[in-house]
Image 1 (cartoon, helix red, strand yellow):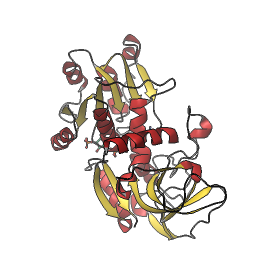
Image 2 (tube, protein in one colour; image 1 turned 135 degrees about the horizontal axis):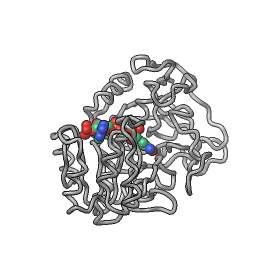
Image 3 (cartoon, protein in one colour; image 1 turned 60 degrees about the vertical axis):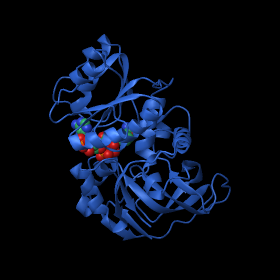
Image 4 (tube, protein in one colour; image 1 turned 90 degrees about the horizontal axis):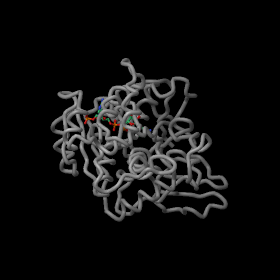
Length: 342
Ligand SMILES: NC(=O)c1ccc[n+]([C@@H]2O[C@H](COP(=O)([O-])OP(=O)(O)OC[C@H]3O[C@@H](n4cnc5c(N)ncnc54)[C@H](OP(=O)(O)O)[C@@H]3O)[C@@H](O)[C@H]2O)c1
């Protein structure tokens, strides 16, 4: 089988290798992978920004969808012919996160999905909604589950958002557009930012209530407060990281929640950390790290019920994986970038 491997860091260093098709053993399922989607984390893995000490070679990409072609002894959860996705953290089946459940994430700690065949624990796959294509299903495991967790769970005990809440999304990448779609399903109001007026217009067709260009207005928190009658937003889907965290704290209402997810503008602040709004406004800053299989399954039910389709920006062929990563680097995308394998 052909699989992409990171043998040295860099998009242009990403190469295919000819590897043996893995053989099933007890408790495992062999997946013929049809499509993979890219997350910003995969881009960081390939560039060596995620973990410069990562053991190589490593098959990248956490997110894939495919067909079960064989199962090992004792497997009853899936059978050949089932259309499935792998889950991001194979050990997080349900309940509260622990360090054990957090480990072994696909495409980082262990080999991922940018391969023709992947051998996964049968307990760590989920059937995806029937109305989705493989390209669409491949977008779900990381970005969609993260957005779902940030809106419906957000910690233990959970702090779910509610209909009528105002939610802020940042940019128009994978996590943000899933958060937009899920928030609209729940009857929330969504405000957003983007570097592009044209992308904001496109987001409006998905239900964005109002948006602001963060290049033109880097201090967008004042606008969010004005748009909420001086109160502030109930929840921020914070993917910007160090460069947006301060604005997010300012834009949140008293008692509101910042779901801290991403690091798009960096991980460390050059400015002093603005701690005062956290205590003055009694904010909750809740870290989100994807989610469990149970969250994935709950999300799939909602996607099926609403016949919702993920936003796929562009589909690349397997041989064009480097171009797909360069496309992510350009930040020209709107929604998810997919690599079709068959
Ligand atoms: N904690 C977790 O479990 C988890 C899970 C998934 C992702 N993440 C993280 O979340 C972030 C987003 O991931 P993704 O896969 O959704 O990325 P993505 O699809 O590559 O999204 C990139 C988009 O984000 C927007 N953006 C970039 N810099 C921005 C900034 N300073 N302020 C506001 N928006 C900005 C841009 O949108 P415009 O072009 O519209 O400006 C850009 O196109 C990444 O840092 C990723 O590592 C974390």
